[in-house]
Image (tube, rainbow, N blue to C red; front, side, top):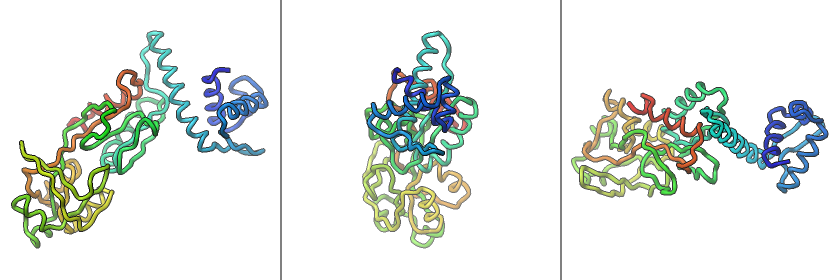
Length: 296
């Protein structure tokens, strides 16, 4: 049997959660399924499924084999459709990594809307406070905010964005509003520590000028919502993305501080391979880039 036959066998076993059920679907006996599964595990040198008389439980190694296997089967099916001249529709497993804040605010809803358009598609969204290695972790797409660190990845800009300095009126009324960058050192700052950025460092620019500042962090967190709540409570200055604070600035809950200074933080879709993008990956990137919520 080919390795792709082994993948199809294993995905069927997991889907049916039964050796007999998998055999029934594949047109072979449960004993034959068991024999092929044991041969597969022996070849791989790992246990894929823990078996008892009543239940099947997939192991961590089995879960990894399943997820990567689904991807390979989907790509093979897509290749065959392309060679037959059939337009490939998004199908299989789409794995997306995004930042906590932007992922919650935008990506989760957009991914759900996208999945609703393609019933054959499965989606997984992993939100993290720092970008994951897409290749090693097996992700199709990463949604990144700010400077891109991994130059090996291909990127498509989704929207312009900048981080601006702001604070609650209560804080500014009590401690004053900084008139220039030098006065920032006298203020308490709430630091949002994410990605691989140097802690407590702001990289600001104003037209052609660039300044790197070390700020005094009174409070810090890796969660943007927590940082924003502290700022609204008057604990200090906060550097936060415009998409996160624009409504709060508009209604006066926050005030801008040194609005001419900002940190660039454009939003990108990043992916490992530009030449052989799957239909699901290409379709989702096109969908999210054109969506009015992102494109404005």
